Length: 209
Image 1 (cartoon, rainbow, N blue to C red):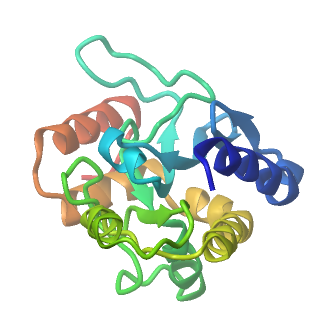
Image 2: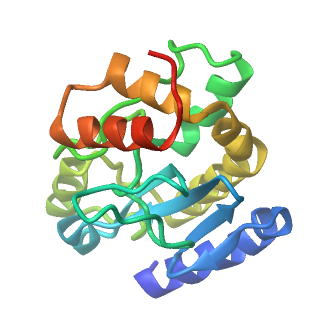
């Protein structure tokens, strides 16, 4: 499958599963916006991974009133917030986490900025179609993906959207500003970007110490 065909598939599946809930399609991703936050189902990009036809599926959440950075920039609605949000989850972690009533054994915050994309945050999906090519397989595996058939990649993208359809908004509702900061403090790596988000949320909301 070519990248243009995969983008078309993403749009068509989103129209079926996400648009009826109020998600809006913008520049290849699906976004749900409330007065408080933006929830996005993102097909994350990487220049090298794109060469091997790999996308990183992720669900990202950012509260709208939280400015970030020295310029205190607030969220631009419907923008791509992959690696521009405080917290993200792989779509395939949503169901277990919600159904277990938010058990940390099923999901907890992991940094989205690392070179190695954590399984709690991303699901790498190869969509190029199965080819018996050792070099291709090796290249795909570098990005954490599997060499799978085109039908299998279609099936997995469909399943990811169904997970977002069923559980995405419930995950967002669970992640209050207090919970976002708790996740960052308990499960973070004390990185500069994590501390920046903690400070931004703490300055915007009245949070318990």
